[in-house]
Amino acid sequence: MQEVTAPPRAVPEPKPKQYKSSSELKKRLWRNKLLYVMLIPGVLYFIVFKYFPMYGLIISFQDYKPYQGITGSEWVGMKHFSRLFTEPDFLNILANTLILFGMNILIYFPIPIILALMLNELRGTFFKRFFQTLVYLPHFMSWVIVVSISFVMVTMDGGIINELLAYFGFSKINFLLSPGWFRPMYILQVIWREAGWGTIIYLASIAAIDPGLYEASRMDGAGRLRQVWHITLPAIRGVIITLFILKIGSVLDLGFEHVYLLLNSMNREVAEIIDTYVYTAGLRQGQFSYSTAIGFFKSIVGLIMVMTVNKISKKIGEEGVY
Image (cartoon, rainbow, N blue to C red; front, side, top):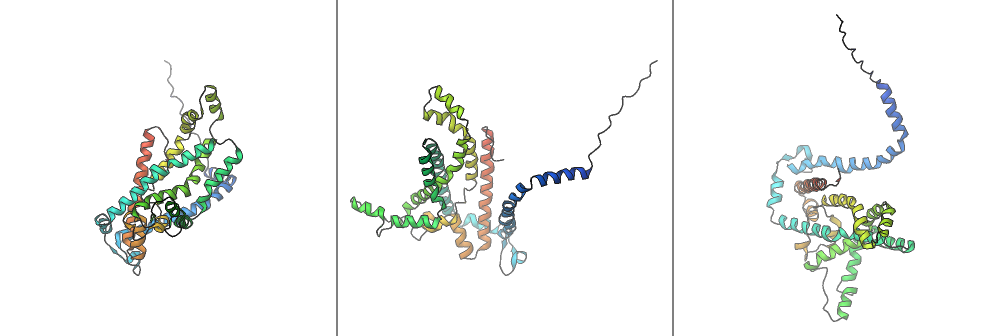
């Protein structure tokens, strides 16, 4: 009778010693040390200006008193959030914010894409660089300068636009005090200052497209418009969607400085937005807990919007931002 022998047991491979893996890690870190050094300023920025201030969100649940501090202030729970949604002026301020954001999405957002496509079609290197520089320059001006230039152009007393209106027989328009002209002025200033700068990413994406695709399309008889529609736009679609998702995250965060410079007592009904309201309530009136609750609300809405749009983009086959 043949004897049955048990199969040999597999001998587990010896685990690498801890000191060996840590040594390899140190070598890898040392080999890429310059890259990690370059990360330090960005990491410090986010830690100091993004993560540390999150501790201050506690005061949105407190009746914060500066002389008592965060630990000594009275805990009031959701009181300030309840006030936020019952404040008579808040719905109007929220509507103003959403309208300006909608104008940014519908009017401003496509313009850098169109501008990048137009600049890409310029064949002369000199003219291409000249126009690129020309449209980039306004970005380096502060909003104070942009609004000041607009003020000089539209003022009733010697403004070039009103002088032209008077020259052609039309009555002068008080652009600065008219509520109906606030939103057009706002979006035109945004376009003039930011559209050129926004083209940089799109031009970089267009430059990465394989030139062979354009050559093949020309051999098939495709004109420039068909090349743009069937090659350029599909190639940069991922970049467009990524920037759109990031833009959606600032749905309630339009920036304080620009709107505040245009804001006055005559157009406040349509010009007051959440950012200027936070400044008025928090710094000028000393309602620190209430203004912090508004900022917390803005952050939550932005997070939800980014997550929602990112999920939608993945469902339609795009990568999204995470």
